[in-house]
Amino acid sequence: MNGPEQVDMARARVFGEVAVVYDAARPGYSDALVSDVLDYAAPGGGWALEVGAGTGKATVPFAERGTRLVCVEPDPRMAEVLRRNTARFPGVRVHVGGFEEWQPGGRRFGLLLAAASWHWVDPERRWDLACAALAPGGAVALFWNPQGVRDPGVHAALAEVDARHGMTGTPHGAPASAYGDAAGDWAGLPGWPEDECRRDGRFADVRGVRHREDRYYGTERYLGYLASLSRYRVLSPGVRERVLADTGRVLDAHGGGIAMEQFSDLFLARVG
Ligand SMILES: C[S@@+](CC[C@H](N)C(=O)[O-])C[C@H]1O[C@@H](n2cnc3c(N)ncnc32)[C@H](O)[C@@H]1O
Image: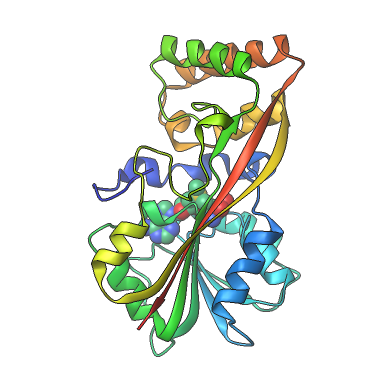
């Protein structure tokens, strides 16, 4: 995850290469998280803005709860799947482009959502862009879903595969027991983005919330999930194939899948 440093543009725009696999394999977001966001922001009948909507993993559960959304997504291949996934919701509009280029025009939103995408927005501009898009008192809801491996034996075997291939920051890089109760204690950037948001000075009522749930991935789905991650996408095809094959062999030797604990980490703040 990119905290205060520069965004790696090559990695930011790789997701569409595997948009369909992404959509099938990536985990979604819990009902509890969606409820927390809606309770906090109370968007009512107003429009929400979603930054980096991807294929709609977060868009759909919010739309199902009656939220109307303008979705900003730079990758046309992701946007195409997003349009398909949200075709049944007349209150979802898709704009293809980066958040940095998008113009709110006269619109101001009561809620800005970013699911696993805020770290891809220009660190120099992201809070200014949020303030420009939000109505007074409008809320930002930024969330991610890091995971930890339940079985220490599986974790150790996968750590050996990752070390052999020089992989870091993989979703199985930490055991579930390494996570505490506070949102944001992962990815080597404890406290981000809460600290960055507080430093900005324009936001109040900053909160971090962590939800936990169990997830089980069969080998094929887990390898699809890994293949959709930017750190696997930037590998050459041959290297990626070898890493995934070795990872799959470990999972197959441990019952044909991997049990994970998913931590939905949610950051909420309100602009003054
Ligand atoms: C990890 S995906 C998350 C997608 C979706 N929100 C989800 O939770 O599955 C990150 C998304 O951010 C998008 N993205 C990258 N740079 C962006 C930018 N500058 N502005 C808006 N979205 C961006 C990517 O195209 C990608 O769809």
